[in-house]
Structure formats: C-alpha cells, structure tokens
Amino acid sequence: MKIVFVGLSGVPYTGRACDSRLANIANLLVENCTIEILNRYSSSKNKPLDGISLDPKVQTKEIVISRQTNRFISIIYYCISLILEPFYIIKSNKKEQIDWLHLYSGHYIDFLVYRLIAKIIGAKILYEYVEYRSEKNSKGIYHKINNYLCDFHGAKLWDACFCISNFLINKAQRVNPSLPVTKVTPIGDFELFNSIHKSVCIKKPYVMFCGHAGYFDVVKFIIDSFNTSKSSKTKELLLVLGGNAEQINRVREYDKHCIIMNKIPYEELIAFYKNSFALMIPLRETLEDIARFPNKICEYTAAHGLIVTTQNGEMGYYFENGVNAIVADNCTVASIARRLDELEEGLYNIDEIKDEAYRTGLYNFSIEAYKSSLLDFLSRNL
Image (cartoon, rainbow, N blue to C red; front, top):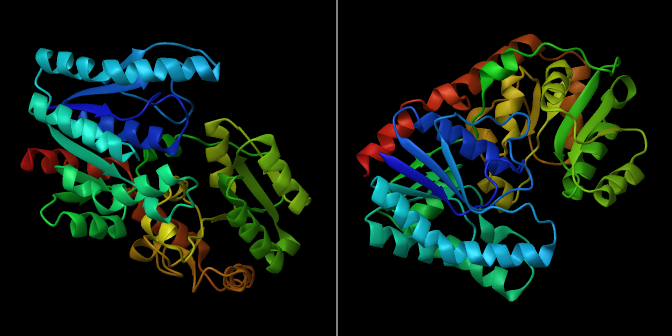
C-alpha cells in the first residue's frame, strides 16, 4: 500500500502540532506501507525540531526548494508549486500505484483539487479531520465561506477519515453517512519521555501550563485560576508559551509574578513536565474546544503528570476526577481554583492518580496503541 501525504508545506520541520501528528502517523504506517510526504514548499529549516523524529524509510519531497524569507518571492514560489504538484503526484503514481492521498488542509478548494487528482490516478482521499473550522473566529468573506464548505460539505469528497474527536466523527458522518471513519487521538512517543531524567532550575513546587500566548483568554484564565487558589501561596506558576514578543509581553504585563519561558529545548520541556506539581489543560465549554483534542494530552500523560482539566469535550471520555486526573465541574475560575485547593488540602492520592493517568495515556495516546489499527482500517476501506 502506498500513501502520499499532501496539502501542506514544510512537514515535519516547522514545529506545528500537525508536524508531530503527521510524523507519528507516517512512522506508524511505514513499516508496512510506502510513505511519501509531498511538501508544496520547503521550510526555512531542513531537519525536524526537537521532539519530532521521522523514520528514515519515510520519503520526503519538496516541489519547490527555496529558503527565501521575502514574502513576495515566497508567494510566487508557492503558486508555482501549486501548478507543479499534480504532475509530481502523477509521476509518483507511475513509479508505484498510490492507494491513498492523505490530505491535511483547511481549504475546500484543496478538497476539490485532490478529489480530481485522485480520480485521475485511481487513488482514494484520506482526510485528517482535527478542527471544526466553522467555530473559528474568521475574518473575511473567503474564510467564512470556506469554513462553512469544509464542515458542511467537505466529507462528501473524502473516501475515509481520521477524526481526532467524537464530535468531529459525528459531524463528518452527518454530512456523509457512508463515510468510513476511525478516531485517532493525539499520539506521542512514550519511550522518549521514559528515557529523560533531568532536574529543573525551579526549586519551589510549581503548577505548569504549556500553550500559545496568542490564546490570551486561555492564558489569562489559567493565571486567574491559579491566583485565586491556595496554590498561589505555596507554588509557582510556570507558563511555557509559544508566540511572538508582543503576545508574550502582554501576558507578562497581566501577571508579573508568574514564570514565563519561551523556546526551550524539548528535552528540557519534558523535564519540566515530569517535575511539575500539576499540569493545567482546561477545555472550555465552546464548540471549538469540544471538537478539538490538544496534542499536549499525550505529553502530559507520558510525563506521569498530575493533570488538572475540565470535563468538556474529549476529556470527559478519558478522565475522571480523582481517578486519573483532577477534573473540575466546569470551566470557571472558581471551579478550577476549588480543585487546586483540594490538592493543597490533601484530598487526593496524587501518586495513584499519576500512575493511572500514565496507563490511560499508554492505552490511548501512545504510538504503540495504534500499531495495527490504522493499517487495518486503511486495508479494509481500500
């Protein structure tokens, strides 16, 4: 079976959440399949970032190779890649029949283009459904129309689908009731986490959150919950944030007492996970959060972390308060702070909860958990 990954540029070199996900899926399937990642355009980097590894048997190709940083020239190269891409796919198909075009894209026009290419070469479309675009706060008429078409008509153009959440499974099958769908949660390399044993520079116990400073409302919610709780008297709050200087400075201005780190090596990040008192990952009561499933959950469980979360969305399917996580009744500052207070008061057996969280992750979020199921699914629906 041959699978070609299409729809993106710079995989797996750009450090996006999708790079980790696609690399793990490619690594899983390459033992039994020919895997080719076809990038429309090269990344400014030429090797995967820390924490992302690609099996040497996975073939990566770039239609246009350029390290240009000039935006205008980059747009020209990107347009050239769009013209050349169908010919690359047809050429690859002549070398070895392509069975699946694995599509990761949020543009409806891509669905149409790859549907046509698949028809020409006799392949099928496997779509990676990881977000409900209709709930994104989109600006401009193009994005509003595009997001509607993706969520309410896109599934008619797919032959099979990897969905990251139950919500998206239901949405896809409502659009296309006959669509073969399987759930693929966030997945990570648990062996990598087990191999890292490092101390960290923070001596005081700390509660940790890892995310993006651009989601200021979420970061603000974490800060407010921590500061409202008894943990603020005995612990530090560590925020490991992606984002630009302006976004991170906005967080610093909001709370000058929390510890903020940015762009730390992946092994160091794992060490901070493993040495934390608690790891925050609340999901809000919004369709956007109900539909998604943060990649951090596989990292938090792999780190044997004490997870503090909410029961919204996918978290409610996997985690139970006091069993394998600390689960708030709802996503409010008061509810999260109450759970942190209960931790301070010693109401939970923390070691047992961490062990059970790790077992939950190993069974649901590790690479090993999907070794045979993905191949079986694709073989059945070919």
